[in-house]
Amino acid sequence: MSKVFEDIFSELQTDMVAICLEYVQNKAEEIYIYCSFEERVISSDFFCRINGKIVKKHKLNDALNDNDSFRYNTSVERQKTVLRIINEDIEKTYNLCNEYGREMPTEIKLVYNVIRNSLNAEYKYELVYSKDPVKTADDVAKEWFEEIQQVKE
Image (cartoon, rainbow, N blue to C red; front, side, top):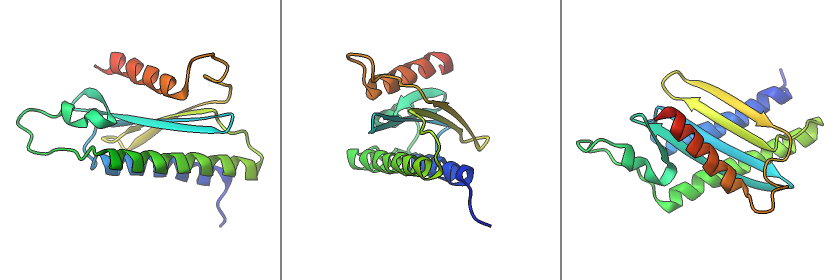
């Protein structure tokens, strides 16, 4: 049986989650992935909830307890690798949408609950930041981080 649009679309999101899960070595409660595609500009970011704390990708070790001997590898190279793979998946999503004549989301917010093995996705199709004179995709990702941080902590 051949794969349909929805199957491939889901697989690309699953790949984004998988690379982030690998980055945190399966040691997170939730993973948040931000994807942006506006006016052919691709941008992404991710952050996590660890020990009840919402932390950016380079600050994972700040969420560990003092007596933890485990440490995350948050090297810049690993961060870049994860973002590159997410961005490639965004580009593949764009190509998939073109191939099937579907509208490409301008924004995708993925929340993966590691404990429940469940994924929630939120999509936007209108421009999020492009019409703003100063706002960028990074600004929107930071706003989402701060919003989640206030709600979850």
